Length: 72
Image (cartoon, rainbow, N blue to C red; front, side, top):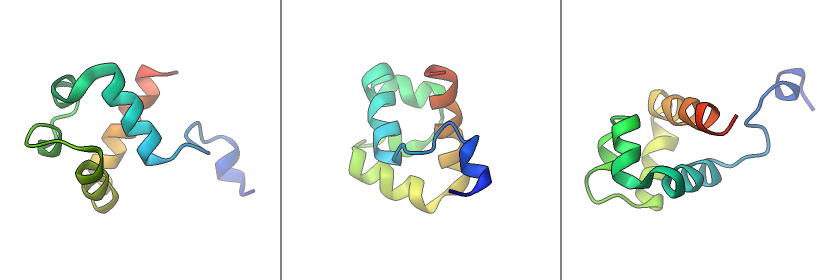
């Protein structure tokens, strides 16, 4: 295990699990209010959102930060 993973609170969590828990907590419209990303507003789905988040690092960073703030 690399040293940087030891202190990573997201280690072991998939992006899909993170997104699913956030959607359960906020819903799609609430998630859009927290993180202004259009894939959460226009015809949202886990699959399409994952595709966007995997390609767009700044958006993934925002979602991960929201997860850490929501589920400490």
